[in-house]
Image 1 (tube, rainbow, N blue to C red):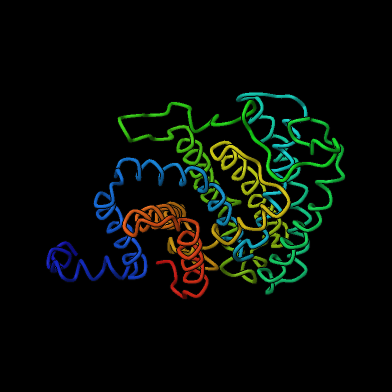
Image 2 (tube, helix red, strand yellow; image 1 turned 135 degrees about the horizontal axis):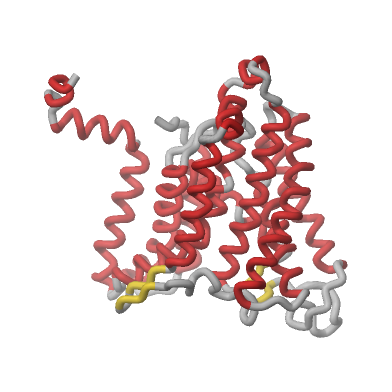
Amino acid sequence: MKIALSGISLKERVKNFIDSFGWPRLIIAGFLLLLFLVAPLGGISILTSISDVLMRFGMNSIMVLAMVPMIHSGCGLNFGLPLGIIAGLLGGTLSMQFGFTGALSFFVAIIITIFFGTIFGWAYGTLLNKVKGGEMMIATYVGYAAVSFMCIMWLLLPYTNPQMVWGYKGTGLRTTISTEGYYLHVLSDFLKIKMGNLEIPTGSLIFFALFAFLMWAFLHTKTGTAMTAVGSNPTFARASGINVDRTRTLSVIMSTVLGGIGILTYQQAFGFIQLYMGPFYMALPAVSAILIGGASVNKASIPNVIIGTLLFQGIVTMTPSVMNSLIHTDMSEVIRIIASNGMILYALTRKSEVK
């Protein structure tokens, strides 16, 4: 075996790496590298660009991680992520309504999010168990319905915090609510490393690493192995004594709760809570990121989450700033929309499998 391995030529090793990593991801990574190389020509600091990419990675990574449990259980891509995001929005707004501030506000928001996420996830999982084979389509409708329903409820729920409700009437939540004075940058500024133009949001990265480790550890437990078995071969899993429906429901609950915690992580870095139609726009980028990272509709891993989030957020962050600096025209939002939608379109039409 050792002789055989030592006999592999450099060309064969490169070919094996390309086959393993995939041409599409290599092309995207190459394009991202090119953007970093071209950035100084437009007067853009590479260190500042790296800081922006790391910040966006910390903001979005947990929402991408939320895709993993449902993929492992065979429920497919979680297009119903807005349901978990709504749980997070309820956690964040109720924490502010109760008057908690600082790190305690963020902690209370997580606790409330877990409570609502568990309830929503159980109901969502029960529904998906009734429509096996059509989960992703039903999940999309669940996301639509939940966002539409909450557009009404945000106006009717009895919030009274003057920083959150509409000023002219005193009822109904505003479209955008600032987290300043509550849990703004509670993770981003924790153990933050700053060296010149380079800023590393250590707290956000540690927070993601914690959940990524917990997810990895869970998938290696008896229950996690059973979840993977259900996703791979539900008939065999059922014959082995595994409760398929209960396992699938657990995966949906985990995904929903992680989606809620993910949006809290996003809010503390972004500085605002976006209600009403806000959750509707968060699912596709998360789905696209994990697919770009190399996952498929029935298999995903932590490296898929990390690679996909870095590539997706890197392209979305770098493309507008580099293009603006080169053409000397402020078209950042137009370019950002084109880049993000292009990545989403590619991700949803690719057919590659995880190796």
